[in-house]
Length: 134
Image 1 (tube, helix red, strand yellow):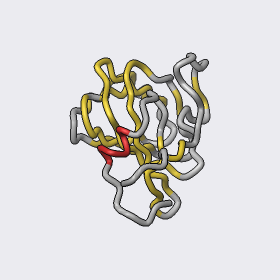
Image 2 (tube, helix red, strand yellow; image 1 turned 90 degrees about the horizontal axis):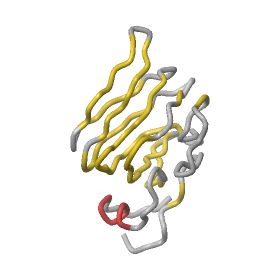
Image 3 (cartoon, helix red, strand yellow; image 1 turned 30 degrees about the horizontal axis):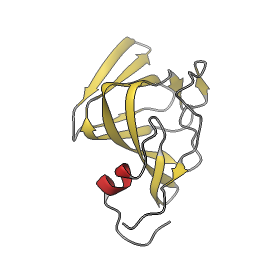
């Protein structure tokens, strides 16, 4: 991990891939990941960990399948939301968004149980940021 400040706008500008979380830094046993997103992700579940989302730009919708039924949470720029462990969810950004997530290091972005993977999504525990001056 870098031992220097990281400008999130610069870090986001360093890659173009969608639904491709990049690890910005680590806090204890958690990755701080950023991603550019557009369109739909897959329905998935993290059985053993919550998932924190902060919308840096744009709007992110998160579909939730809870015991009480299905609902969608709408997150505007600056909004945060935590998906509780064990809740099936699907992020979606029809017009695109940039997001920051906290996840336990080693957590696969598509969760422990997920729908079949469309071609535009790759299962990963996060990519390193490209080497650039921060």
